Amino acid sequence: MSPKVCDGYIALYDGGRLRIVADGFRFTNEIRLDATEDWLYVAETCGRRITRLRVQPNGDLTDREVFGPADHGAFIDGIAFDAHGNLWGTHVMTDRIFALTPQGDLRILLDDDKGSAAGKALMAAFEADAATPEMMLACGGAIAPWFASLTFGGADLRTVHVGSLRGTRIPRFRAPVAGLAMAHW
Image 1 (cartoon, rainbow, N blue to C red):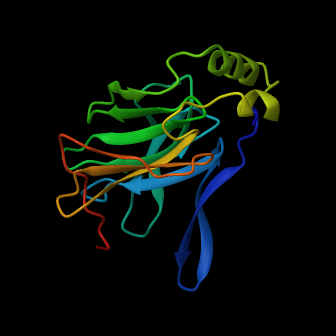
Image 2: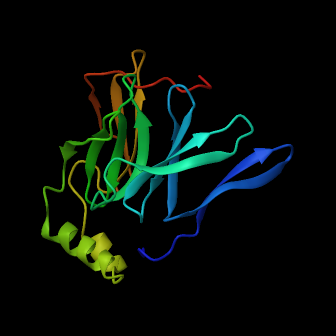
């Protein structure tokens, strides 16, 4: 975990070959298309931000920009859209669920870390490029330590399932809005 490494990329399988269509990301994690498939959203875990790129008909990605805060102050892991265009996500190790409105405003929906000393120490060490595995392992809430992903499920897509890297169960809750159905469903 380093703020200096930016070797992440996005590759497109095109005509039987992979081609890199964007690079220079800080730990490329989950990616999602919006409802119209005009924009591809990238969770940059070590960039602690969401980046989006406009999708061209040939698969090229252009108009790269940060969507929402330039720095969440936490590591972003999984992301998913709801039916209203809000982008939900997880802050891994500091165990929060957030949503970015279509305008990019950040809303914390669930905070299982509650500003813990371990979480604050990890983020300060990360900024100094001095984060250690021991510092990371000291973090995590009680619901599902190290929130890593979320997905909308159930017949009405209003049940949010929370995946974690250190948990032993998959907690879920009812959302006030439905998730965006995936294009391949």
